[in-house]
Amino acid sequence: MTLPDFQISRFTESHQQFHAAGRLWVIPEIRFTVLPDGSTGIDGDELDRIHTAILNEICGEPGPLAPAELDFILDVAQASLTELAQLLRMDKSSISRWRSGSRTIPSPPSWLIKRWAWYRTFGADLAARRVNLGRFKTDVGFLSYARRQAIKQGLTSPVSPHISGNPAAAGS
Image 1 (cartoon, helix red, strand yellow):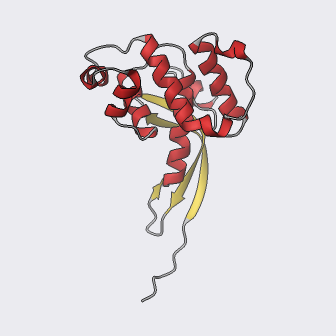
Image 2 (tube, one colour; image 1 turned 90 degrees about the vertical axis):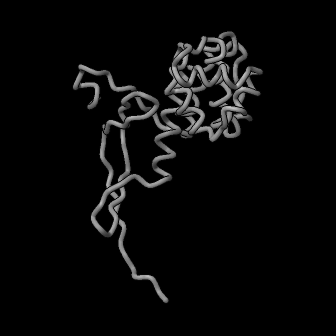
Image 3 (spheres, helix red, strand yellow; image 1 turned 90 degrees about the horizontal axis):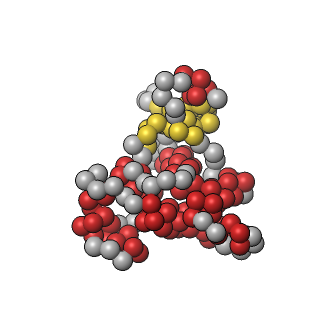
């Protein structure tokens, strides 16, 4: 039995809003797929590309993680709560409280989680690159540098959080 031939077409839209990690993001370019029935969607590879770009942005931002960002990082990094608890040498229930929002995520664990997620996503591709040791003085400095390097090396695309109340932000 042969399957019928069908055409899948694609098109690109610029400056699209995309909801992830509890925030609205502006994605410079999203590739959509039109299926034979006329429905439009985002294929798995494109979704992975967008999620990777958002993860890079979250990891490069200063400040602690929000609960929705922690969930997003675990999903994109394909990691379990148990794995993260082992990494942090913490009880799984403490991390569960962070995820539920009943406890804030302190800055030091946030930075460690961001470093871990960034290395898990981009580390293999950038491991052989030389880095000035001055970049490692602070977590915030390193993570900001790492974010820029992932974009500069073409491993991901830049994205930006949507600034509510500013319609120009979506198009800039």
